Picture 1 (cartoon, rainbow, N blue to C red):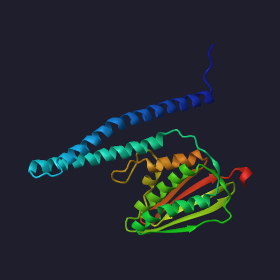
Picture 2 (picture 1 turned 180 degrees about the horizontal axis):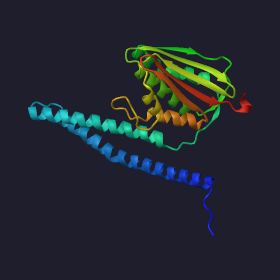
Picture 3 (picture 1 turned 90 degrees about the vertical axis):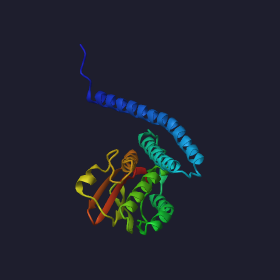
Picture 4 (picture 1 turned 135 degrees about the vertical axis):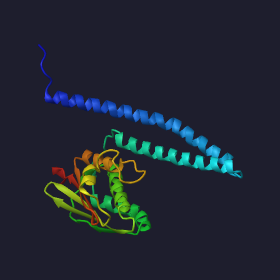
Length: 242
């Protein structure tokens, strides 16, 4: 007489199914990139062929090629973002000075902030304990949040980055003075393909959340229309590092 599957068995079955779907989706994205590269190359060659357009027909053709090139680039960006989101990556965790990671990310982002008239302000707890990080993955997640904050301040503003501690955790706050968002938008912003940015893939913040969760942490958002947004990242401090 067969027995009903246990909760653990059902959970593992769902994980296996999700993993298989993710692998298939990633493989499909890779396959799409190959013909897309061929299309982009031929569009470039066509653009070069009519670079010296003189007739009305050639000018119309040049405009159409330009549209197709932009759409190809948009597809390329979307595929790159999707592959980053779907990639099942083994994190390489090492004891890391989180403050140092933040300082280096802000230094890298400074030129982008200057271009958008965004003032970067940091209040970093000098006694912050080390945490286990995959520096490359975490840096990518942090830069996604910095870029998101800049986009929320099209007329410029201030972005404050603060670190502090809580029992068993370190906390990172990113607070911008941007346009903010309503409750419905905030509730969906970590969902894949949800975007309020024209032409955006809607995968930047979901990828960020996935990376934070892979570190054993969590990310939350608080926002108010017209008053700005605060992202809060919590990361665990292993007992042996406290």
